[in-house]
Image (cartoon, rainbow, N blue to C red):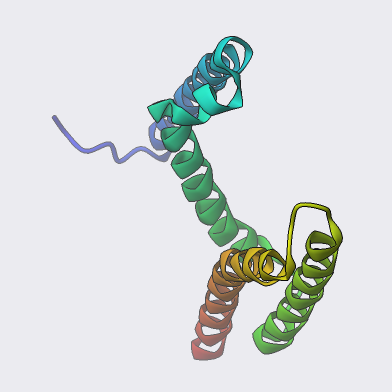
Length: 143
C-alpha cells in the first residue's frame, strides 16, 4: 500500500475518519442511554462503554486544545493566562467547598476533598494550555 501524498485525498480521508468517529460516538451514547433507561445510572456507569466514552471525550478535548491554541489570533502572555486561570479555578474550588460543606449529609472533610479533586482535575488542562502557549511563543521568537 502506498502512502497518500495528495493533500485533497488526505483531507478527504480525515473527513471520513471524523464521520466514522461521530457515528461511533452516537452509537456509544445510544447504548449508554439505553442502559440508563433500563438499568439506571449505576448500570450505565458499570458498562465498559462508559469508560471508553469518557476516555475518548478526554482525549478529544485535549487534542482540540492544541488546535484552539494554534488558532488564537492575539498574542497574550502565557504566564498572565496561567495566573488568571488558576485564580478562577481557586475561586471556583473555594465556592464549591463552601457550598458542599453547607449541604446536609456532607461534612467539612467533604468540603476539602471534593474541591481538591476539582482543583487537580482543572489544573492539568490549564497547565497543558500554558505549555502549548509557551511553546507557541517560543516558536514565534525563533522565527
